[in-house]
Image (cartoon, rainbow, N blue to C red; front, side, top):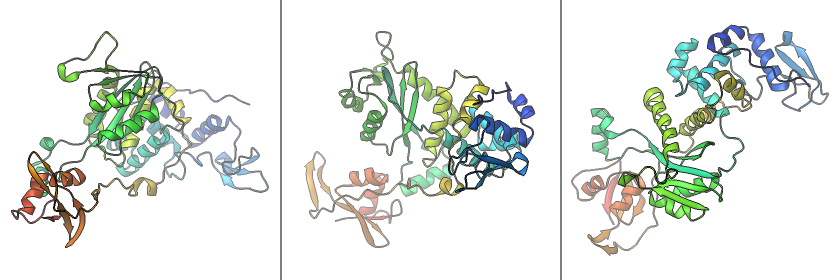
Length: 390
């Protein structure tokens, strides 16, 4: 069996020179993916015939006889964009330290922005971690919140937020990094602190030593591991005893923030996990040269993302959490007196009931002051709903 073809170029200029012809790209992928001997992606037969002047192949298995190309089942599958354009796109996305936007990629490659955006997400899809292993030894953990700030929004958007009373949603990303090892970035399903624990247990081995900040949620998590040390950032403590710190994961988050602020500007919750996969891959392969990272990425190309899958609704639209209905008009008496049950009304129908206005705010994201004005008759609606005391 022949060895994989070595990468002949060292930079983008040489890549464009070496892969300017489509057949050269096909021959390179055949050599890289199948070691020069095509394998049918439908039946795994190694019997094949070359057709269409080497551009495609035909399976030699009598029970199959299907025609296929080297791009079947890869990120290039079904694309009308030539490989001579795909290769520079793969190189640019993998080589740029903070990524490259779809607008810039479109200008560099001479394609439309929509096509560049689709190509970018196809490449990011191939970077997803297929076989996850546990992080061991000394592991630093922290979280970062992704989302716009109200003070940075336009006057029109801030006025709409004030009118609707809806707090801008943010996405929580959990970062875990093994000292001198691998980085993991995983998007939490919500902003609740309870969602941190399952993600940590999924990625970190029980024998590991955890390094975190002073967040209370990590105290409970740390009881399940060999050791847990924390630093109190609120007291301006960042390093203790020379090794107790979270500076490594903070450095990785610094690159993450720079990618958002300087390149992407906005990451929607729907696609945030793919951006995390991209940034995670570049960080973990930072010791490789750009041409070596390109070759490594081609080794992960056997994954496919269709336009329908990319643009479908994946259920990340926030919905109200419906609490169990309570018949009593009062609940426990707190410091501020009796809490009254409030119901959420849409088109004249009660769609949810909450034990208090504070509970309604937590479930819907609509600020309690706006809900209070509605139930007191000072305004007609808040967040698109009517509100009444039960």
